[in-house]
Image (tube, rainbow, N blue to C red; front, side, top):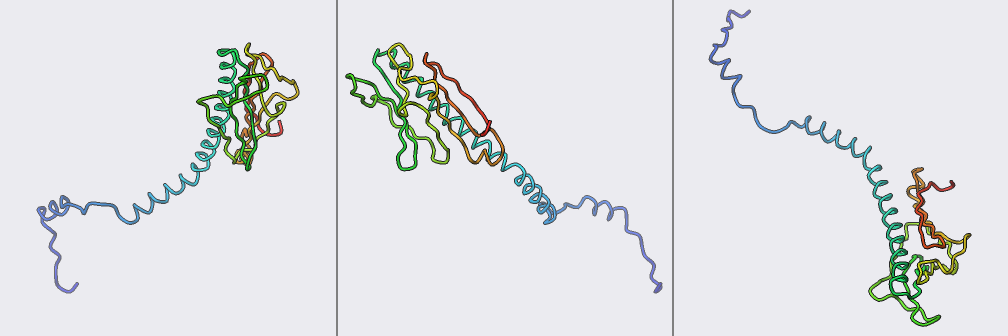
Length: 186
């Protein structure tokens, strides 16, 4: 050594050093670790969330259409006038709406009911005679055909993920409905 002896720090200095306030906040390393963890979680969870949103939109669209069919049936029974739900394909978009038969062969839009549309991101197959379902005043389907009695709404996005991508609403002669959830090709 160079002739100097090291004097140990006093107990008071040690106590002050240990209890001295540390600067508040996070270090850059801590922040980077948190950002990396959030990034990995996002990478894993966002596709699942997006698929859930797509499935919900498909479900809501199909159930809304089925509710409209039920409304047409109930209006036919309530008013004792033929009602129908008609599907139209215009400008690459499927619309559906309720009409009532005021005079034989004279169909008019039901007051207070607007056109509903099926989002263009879905593939739609309308399999009804003349693309409509007609309800009699007794609630029966008056234009029933056992080989043409359904509407299928399909999501290409869910199909790409091998998830149930089709929702099918079938209508029967007695005015009842069946809702199915399937994967394309089944």
